[in-house]
Image (tube, rainbow, N blue to C red; front, top):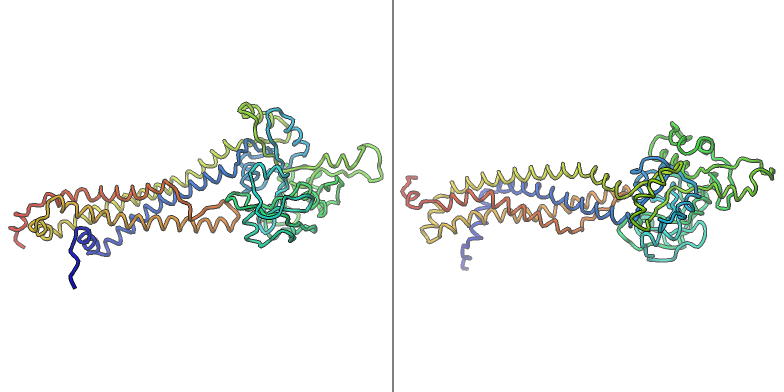
Amino acid sequence: MTAAPLTLPRLAWRYLWARPMLTALNLLLLSLGLAAIGFVVLVSEQLERGLKRDLAGIDLVIGAKGSPMQILLAGVFHLDQSTGNIPLATLAQVKAQPLVAQAVPISLGDSFRGFRIIGTTPDYFALYALPLAEGQVWSGPMQAVIGAEVARRTGLKPGETFHGTHGLGEQGDAHAQAYTVVGVMAATGGVADRLVLTDLTSVWEAHAQHGHGTSAAGVPTAAHGDERDWSARHGPQADRAKPADHHGRDDRTGHAERAEHVEHAGPVDVADPSDQSGHGDRAEHAADDREISMLLVRYKGPLAAVMLPRWVNAQAGLQASVPALETARLLSMLGVGIEVLRGFGLVLLVAAAMSVLVALLHAVRERQSDLAMLRMLGATPGRVAGLIGLEACMLAALATGLALGLAHALVGALGMVLSAQQSVRLSAGWLSPWELTVPVLAFGLALLAAAWPAWRGYRLDVTDLLQTPR
């Protein structure tokens, strides 16, 4: 059996692994630095794309007075509690504005196994361009259309029923009236995959059955303990300032439940049912008192971006949240962490480059006799220098493969954690053109580190080496 000829790549590979511990250390340093850079690229790009996708062209979110950032997180990304309720009459008020192209109401506060139940209108499907994979949109109260991830995680199908619970925790009190699944949305990769959509009247009916606010027909219901009384007497802002809920809970469930009470405990008509005077038609009056959580607004033109937020903030109890501004703020806050991780990766890369430089310099010194022999056998100085550069490139190629694999694995692990928390979605299979910076950095640093050792190899004097006593 004839041995394979010892080509330059084979010789470089053998030289690379002649000192396995040192090579493994250099490979680890280089891989970790590159993986940190790749991780930052994958996460930041997915977050940015996800935010833009979930905004769905929404120009303005209107909620109760409070933090504009909280309104955006609660109304668009569904990651926070709402700031309170606003009157249903606000919807007609906003739609009457000539600068408004579309206004979609949403009502928050309930969930099913951690997935939010959103009361809205069929316009929500058009706003997000949500296609249905199965079934149809609701045609009456207590019917629901579930997102693709909700269907996958809960196993619900059209025709099956479920009970919503107060707040966002799974330990909240369940509503007596069950929802019937009538449709399943196709997967979009956005926030809608994690939502349960139903009609506004369903939310009002569910809480009317449970004793909160008014029913869809405008009939006020009995109070649900002291919580609703507090809201009715003092309003949503006072309710948020209430030190503890009536269950005495201070965890997420308790907080969610307090917010839910705020969102659905509309003003209550406490007049005697026998009283036929004063308020006129009692049902109609109560219906006017119904509330929603927020409005998602699209502008007709650029002038609206200047006029509408000012008009909204001038209204009593209303707060405007401009997604373009709040998203920029959110990304700038996230950017601090991203920059820290990117800086950590660069430090690792510099350390790896220095380590490779030192290792190659030692290798050239140790292999002087071998390199002199190569020169005597006919190798040119350029081939000797190329041998050293090839060794560094092989290390860079190995590090690139390991780094990209590690970066995608870390993103996948983070995505699983966030998915379990019903938070933003990250995919390990996401491919970004910016990942090309990883091999560019790897080969650039490797060649830079190999430049001086390669020059030393190129300048080796064979005569001096052969005359030097060993």
